[in-house]
Image 1: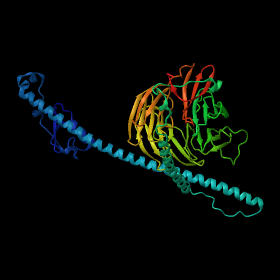
Image 2: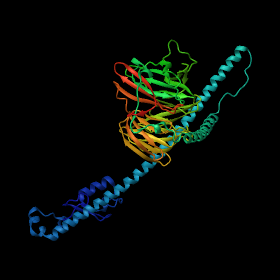
Image 3: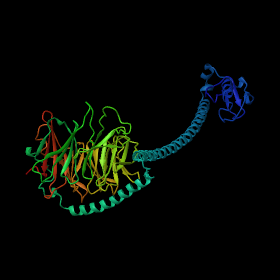
Image 4: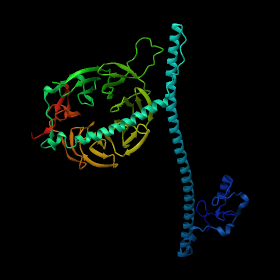
Length: 534
């Protein structure tokens, strides 16, 4: 009984391959050789002349009666059959392993080529960004030259030749050097401030810091009625003023200084919000001036041919003066500013742009969906917080590179501590503390999620949603994590929206927003935390 090496079944017409010396079914082997021109086993080139038929007499297949006889059901015969089956299985396994090895090599080569293609694409993107910036400078220079030429023609004098093109490398060098020198200055300043603040946190003087409370006084509140939900509060560095943004499109500049008898609205603007549109929180303090980023209103009437239209504009909330924002982003959902320099970043979920003196320095494409950007207190690094499971990247604005990736699951916000040593990460149901110096999470507690993390200048108290965590810097742990008392005493939702710098009396000023469906929003100013037992 002869077995075909291709089908592994008995054959009535066996044939021998002179190349591999394997037995095959004659018809199957002829078909394979005509189709492929090589031996099925050894892959050597062969033709029909290499096929030798075997006498059918030697390959007679026993019928069922013969198989039932003791000759075929004997143990030696069955062992021989098992051996033949094992040999066929071994051959098939060898062929599969050969094909697998070949597939692995092809996959490795494909991955190598893909990696090379990605590197080429990244280089092309950088060259594209540089070309865009150079083209923008060239266009600006050409426009200025044309204006000067027109003026010279009007007065009948020949305009002097001037080189009005600005060297992009000089702009970049100035930006990079300024950012680095400011980072060094802020590092020295913050070290001194941290040393001076050591042991002076207002929390230390409270009888029971593990059970903190706030008391809302109607005399220290501003009612906004129909302004809708508070989507964000951005306090000034001094903590005497803050920008309050509402879902209705209202932005208010509020005086919250301790010297003022009562909170008052200093200035406000209303932005047009389309029905059903979610207004992003786009405001920041640049050089102690409050700015709001918004879409440029549609121009009425005939458009000027000489005026370039920008999709977004910046409005000084104090003076209400607006100017175009030279951004190439189709939409903007994030806007943050450097702690001390006239530098800021605008972004959407896939790209961000860095500006210095209102001039774009560069843009950066992202491989993950961006949720938040937070500046490090020293101003050189930023935290890029991503949606989903991508975690947080620490990005260097001068080197334009990622210095550290912090793996973390779904989270709502991140915030640097005032001392710059720690990064707080607010998850859906947890608050975590990451030590940037040791590259490790040192603390994590299960808490109800919030929308923004608030940290005081002493890095002694962290508010996330309605959870208040008192932080022990010496032990690098929470000394207590509990719900902030006094917020549930009012109808509707109440939440802390800002923790301001302590004043002369070293007390935290806390801003609390209460949102009632019928009465709109009330904003309360609370001077200092206290123990719930007091």
